Image 1 (cartoon, rainbow, N blue to C red):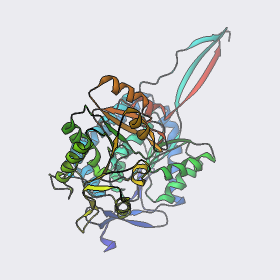
Image 2: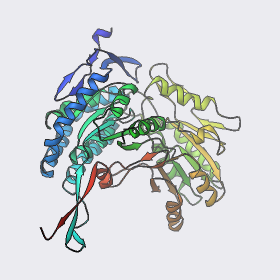
Image 3: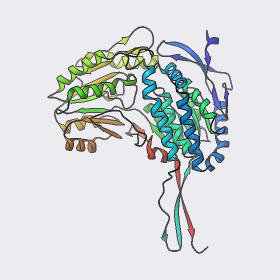
Length: 479
C-alpha cells in the first residue's frame, strides 16, 4: 500500500526534492483515518541545503526596490485565486475541513492578506530625518532581517503559512518554512505556485517533524525564528534561539474568555458564540470556548447553547450541512476526549461529550457547565469543539476569572452597555478584545497575545514591522 501513496516533497532552491536520506512519514486524512501520501522526514542535510539556498538568495531579494517585491506578492495572490480549487482540495485532504467553508472562509482572506502585505512593502515607516545634535543629521533605515526560519501549525496550514511568508517576503527576507508533519500537502502546492514567481531560494519548504523544526531553529543561518504552535513548542523555540540570540516571533495557545452580561441579546449571543466556538472543530487559539455568564441569565444561556450545540453538525468534507470536520489527528482526539473524561463530579455535560462515528477523528459539539475557576478544563487549552460555561456575579469577578489563566491571546465582551464594554476592553488582559462578536480578523489589525500566548504580532503593519530591523544613520553636515 505504501508504494501507492502520493508523494509530497521538499522545495529547496527552486526544485522539489526528497529527503537526502530518503526518510518519509505517512500523511493521514483525518476524515477517514487513512494514509494518502508520504512526505519527507527531513534531517540535517535538508535543513542545511534550504538554509544555504535562502542565504544565497537573500542579497538580491533584499536589494530589490519594494515595488518589485510588491509585484511578486500581487502575482502570488492572483495565482492563489486562479488555483484556488487545487489549494482547497489539498487543504481538505490535509485537514478534513468542509469544502464549502474552506472555499468561502479561507481563500478570500488569504488572498487579501497577501495583497495587504504587498502594499506594506512600499510603506516603510521610520522617524523623519532631523538634526538632534548640532552639525549632524540623523535618519532611520528600516531593513529586512535576513533568513527567516518559520514553523506553521496544522489547524490552518494554508492561512498560517500566508501569515508567515507574506510579511517576511514583503519586507525583503528569504524564507525556510516547515509545515506540520500532519498537514504538508497544501504547503507543498503553495511552494509550486510561489516558486514559479520568485527567484529560486527566496521561498523554501522543508517537511518533517519536531526534530526537523528544532534543526531549523538551532541552525546558525536564520536571523529569526517564527512559530505558531503550542506553548511547549514556543518555549522550546525561545530557549533554542536564545543560544545565538536569534529574534523570535511566537503565536502560541489561547483560552479566550467570552464574557456575557445580563443585558445581552441571548439568542444573538448564543448564535455568535456557538459558531466561534465550534468553527474548525474548536481548533483555533482564539476560539470562543470559555464562556463566563452573569448569574441572572446563566440557566437561560446554558439551555440555549446546549440546544444550539445539538443542532450543529460535524461530518465529511463534502457534506454541505456541516459546520466543522474532524480533529486533526488521533492524539488530538485523545486529548479532547481526555478533558471530558476527567471532568470533576460538579461538572455537567449539557450536550455532546463523545466521539462521532468510528472512522476519522470526529467529536461532537460539547457544552459543559457547573465548572470552577481552578478546574483543569478551565485552565488548560482543550483545542477542540468543547465550550465551557461558568456563572459570575459581577463585573469584578468576571474580570478576575477572565484574566485568571496563563493565556492572553483573545477575548470578547457581550453587552449593550457602552461604558461597560469600554471598561472591560481596558481591563481584559488579552491581545484582542471583541465586543458583541468573536473571531473576525482583518489584515489591517494586529493579532497576537501576551503572557504564555507568546509575543510578536501577525497581520497589520505591526506584523510587517516584526520582520524588519531599524538602523540609525548619522551624517556630518560639514563633510
